[in-house]
Length: 289
Image (tube, rainbow, N blue to C red; front, side, top):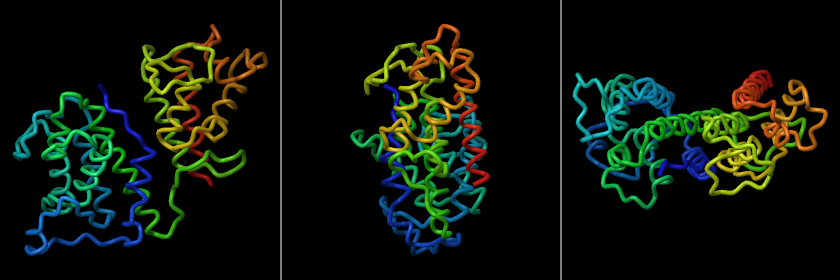
């Protein structure tokens, strides 16, 4: 079964952890004495170098052809494919000049795995998750993307800016946050193929559903990302606004998201385009706020 990521757990429990109060540390080589202590629960302070490491690991594993799903935690320099563990190790060495088994990037990836695979009891979390037959390449990418988002929020908070928080969707006229953009991006992933789309005339969204209309894709995304079962947030409002501006039959719609979705004139490509337009607009608003 494909892994389902709960952002409400991951972002709230990991990004807003006690490490927020530690400030931004500068990257320094570890002493031999410190390296000798192998604490599986260690949570080093996050630095700008750690964010670079995660971004580099995402570049290293940017296609399924580069992924090695038979990890043994040995990372030869000439390897053409890399596991999740090795991608992080290689990225750490490239950025910091040395491998750090308990560095912030590797540790945070382990903590994310702890949250989403709590009952699997891997002996080595990165290797076990990487080699798990149920793990897909998209799952591995998502682990790295979540860690990057967590690090970005921690660094922003430590620098003195207001941290991005989850919670009820914002009322009309309030500022758009990165969380709102992530809601739309998650909805795009939920509806990433025609096989996952349905035209059901409903706003009752089953948690066990395998296909989704536009409304339910956004609602599922809002619950997973923002921990908010609320259809009045910026993602929903902007989607309705785009429908008003672009749908020829919008004047006849009673519930715009549902009615647009079931309109015979609406195609799956139209739904994808709408979500991309919403994501672009929200991104622009965040950049100009």
